[in-house]
Image 1: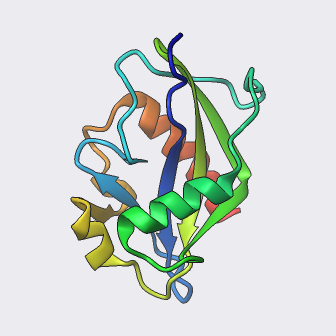
Image 2 (image 1 turned 60 degrees about the vertical axis):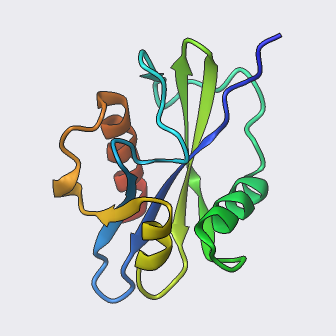
Length: 141
């Protein structure tokens, strides 16, 4: 029996004073901690996943540990969820924001990531760009 694909997190930091929003990019992907496989397609906004979504607490805890950040450094955005269909099965994608005053640049660097603005997203797969569009709409409210 094939294992279900791991859920992904789309991580961002929104500056409290200026609302400057940056996403954490890992090489050629914005998804922590593995890119989507080739052939991934984003489901329509109103299409429900066929299985239960993962509880965000475990995902956030794992991400904080990988980034070397204290608990509470990430907060899920409950208004956002997306499902991506892949050849290996459906992949839930959750949106989480850093709660720190400034982006944790050192933590990002420690996992080969960097914070980028929307203008620096060229070259990402179309599915990830669609995810960012949806996320940005939710982040800006």
